[in-house]
Amino acid sequence: MKQLGYYGAFTLAAYLFFAMIQLPAAQVHALLDKDGALPVRLYQVSGTVWEGKAATMDVDTIRLENVHWTLRPWTLLLGRLESRIDFAKGDGKISTIAGRTFGGSLYLREVSGELPLSDLESFISKNPIGLSGELDIALDDLAFRDGLIESLNGSLGMEGAGLGPPISTTVGNFTMDLETNDEGIRGVLRDTGGPLQAEGLLLLEADGSYKFTVEVSLRDPSRSDLRNALRFIGTPSADGKVSLVQTGKIDLGKLL
Image 1 (cartoon, helix red, strand yellow):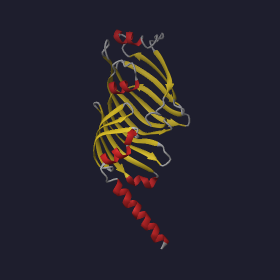
Image 2 (image 1 turned 45 degrees about the vertical axis):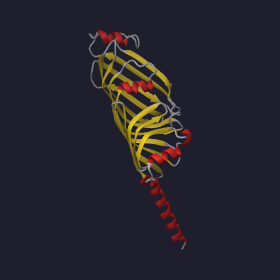
Image 3 (image 1 turned 90 degrees about the vertical axis):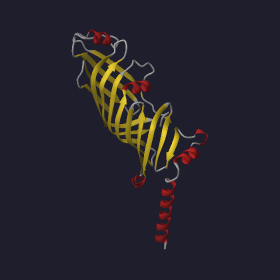
Image 4 (image 1 turned 180 degrees about the vertical axis):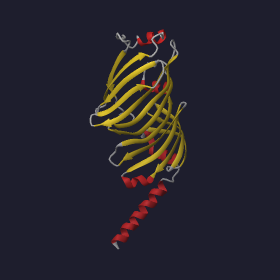
């Protein structure tokens, strides 16, 4: 009888859970976001908790459009809850699986898509220089803990990267391979063709501090426009290479 009671309780819990995720997403969001309690705001919501849409979604100061989600409730059996999410940002589109473990860790898997570099620059820089081109995203996984990036594996590519006025020219194509090891996250940058040659190394430590070292030079020394642009970055060495070292700290506490 006791075993029968356990099966009955499990059946009831499963029924209540699946009934809940079939509720209208707009009503559930309005209930959870009472007095602005949620860090994420959805607008023009339709569909259900299981599968739904939102015309726009605000995450802190970041606005995403045409958001579509599909819950993956069976992942609860693996100790986490996941959802497939697709959204647009400007002219770019991103698709990923977002999840949260019972321990509170947030993560993304199978992140793919394209994003205009101009949109990326407006997010990461207070003084944009007018980047053009496209960022190609192909990440295997991206995990967060306590507002910090815990692991990151995959690759990022920049196609047709260019600079805005007064230069207004394409500088090349680049790729960065990212992997996580015992020392933190390591990203190796290299060019894949174009007027500008580049080699760089990104090191991101567990506390969020990073160091990005890059060395650039001209593939065609006769490009006086780019040679003058490089002087804004630093003084060329005898072999024409310009080195740049950038340090800082990444803290996503406001977003996560």
